[in-house]
Length: 422
Ligand code: EPZ
Image (cartoon, rainbow, N blue to C red; front, side, top):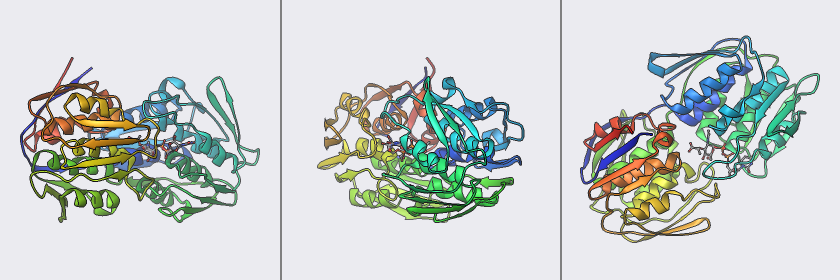
């Protein structure tokens, strides 16, 4: 398992290209199952999660060809060979459950393994099954697999009222509803930009959908969907992550492809923390206004609130902020596992249930730390940029799930960072 070694204390100066969104690509790829015509994605990120989704679609019989060093994915699911999503693949990546809706809609049947727990929480699928049952599906759990069957005449439109917004459940229901007979209305839908991107792609395929990005999405089912070519939207979580980098160690970076509308609530917090964000023709230019950032309080919420996927990163920044900050994690039940690793670097953090209180210290000290999940791993690397001495982050396979070659992107801006094979 590789490690990443970071030597702190160097300012960052340069440009960082932001890739296509992992969490958009992971829902766009299963959309190929809805049509027997080719679906091509451009601006795809080069990540291990994309490779996992590729393997899953291929295991179903879909063709997925990676072109231009992985930035283009040419897909076709003309002849599927099975509708069973195997545990061995699903357990590695929860987003595998996004084949459920498309398989059910186009093929009338889907058998998808429950993903099992993950580091950040139990991550049940009750909202997915509820939503699809509102479209007429019958779903039962057998031997750890969800067995879903559409009615004989296929799925039919329905009204879904989610008790809470769920990104994945909204995506599964939207995809399934495109081929259901009649009208589907989803209330309390998730509003994330990745859902907006999915709807834009489905519309190119011939779907009739309105309201994406709002809490109510309406879908008129159609008989079939065609092919399309779609550019994956910019990754707002990678963007937000690298917007923080100069705030840790000084300097100024320009984030190519960055868009303010993707990181609204996050930018408000950066402004309060004393981080300047300026729109340029190529993206966003970011620098720290003065020597030390201010402590800010954060509550994670569904979009357009502060993203849970940026909570670990801003916690790491608050470790050397001027003052005390309180972070409340409202989306997942166990998403503070980076805290004890940051404490090993000299941070002062107290965790009580869903709240973490961070008292800023002058400097962190480099240490050997362990990545526990995707976003925790990058927060430790960012902390290493600010720390005195050397930080070694182990188990960076977590990192490679969601960040393209971090050492290249940060190294190009002057960071002393390298990947150590072990
Ligand atoms: C998506 O996960 C993202 N993953 C996550 O990003 C992100 O953290 C999350 O949305 C929240 O924004 C992808 O898009 C592939 P949810 P998802 O359903 O869809 C509960 C990353 O780091 N819930 O919106 O699984 C759930 O337990 C990853 O890139 C149910 O109770 O998230 C959680 O507490 C991590 N029942 C809350 O809802 C359900 O049926 C939000 O989950 C589904 C979810």
